Image (tube, rainbow, N blue to C red; front, side, top):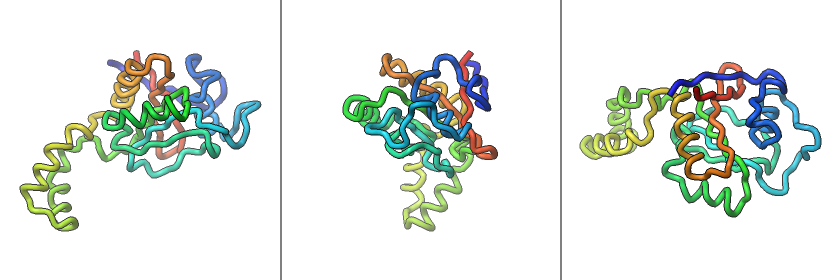
Length: 185
């Protein structure tokens, strides 16, 4: 899988597949600082489920009621299938944005094993074998090699599970506070 990033600096930069959808609205709110014509300031029900990394520091700029937000490790929804289904089946979202970020500390997670184990011993009071086992058990599920490739793969996985729901892989760029569209080639 090859990926590329497409910035959104103007309305014309929004990919055709996203135009007229809640994904386009999200990109307008965050990157352009504007609401699309005819979009109210407060929503009666959410239009989109936004999955972000639990450590992503900045809040996305969205109007009240526009989105359901889930914060999970690396924006992975693998452990939250019912929450996703509930957002679609009960809350009525019509789109999902999987938003990774460029400074994700879950990249190369295996390299942080000793730091994790020591912190669990010192800060949480765990014994070394329990801390090591805990890390070894969960790190493969939550570690990512590349945030861009991860959100592309997670979006593809969700798209196959929910074929009628638009799923968009996006990357939050911390330095600019903008969302980039991830294109899978």
